[in-house]
Image 1 (tube, rainbow, N blue to C red):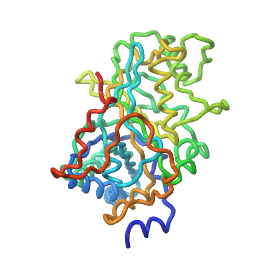
Image 2: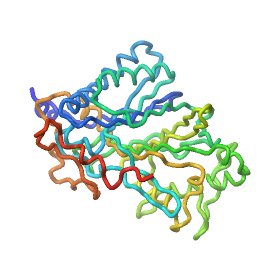
Image 3: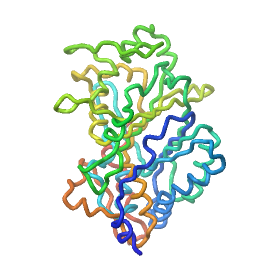
Length: 368
């Protein structure tokens, strides 16, 4: 039975564990796939079998929470999936303000590994990389941890505005607007570094004005009006044309190495609509009004930036069949891939490669 036969006979809308409860430990793993057919095949087999790899680790102790969500980037999508891409998927777009820049860095695959104990996270990451068997290059590996009552290293509670209950799938899961990819989510990740000593030198009242919440008890402060400097909370609040607030799901985590003087926050946002996160970043880096950027960026520097699509679990499973492509027939009437950036196509392998290498240096790659 081909994948086309099996996949078309059942809905492909079971999401991955995007909404998995907050855990104590996590690894954020960004990889690029080598430019040859064998590596792409290995990557495809690994992501298609991720459910079994998670079970292999989780079954060692059923009281432990273990999960992994997998994202696929725009560059590798055509070769790995062998079909059309989700409507909004494109490489991370650089956002350049007068003072700060949101950089774009390489990334074909993303693994968000979560568990309540770091040894389970470590073990699952080790097994995933072993399955990939040298087919990838590790672009970034960040080990995160839950810091007290879900605070970042700046000392504030992080993720307060996350949707809950029935609001969560509405905010994070693609629906009828892109039927071939229903059940999936867009994913944006950025790694921020903090000069912690400079931040800690600020009076608490100034820190609270920058964030838009009180530090000890996480109470919202009033929004600035007119052209006054807006807080981080206000600049990251996005509304649609009707004034309805559009949420994203953050699972940010602190990371750090005190001995090396490295402190940071790993930003990770799942969203039904990529443009919501992009507008959030534009308001932070360019400012509203332009020139009045998010003051948190004076103490939080973005050193990575990547975009992925997290397909539904059933879509991911369907990639295991080598003889067919997933059912994306619904994309015939879907909008083309948006964005100005080139997207890889499965080029004829005259030299054994897939012709992806030339696309590694896109206009949106790291510029700092």
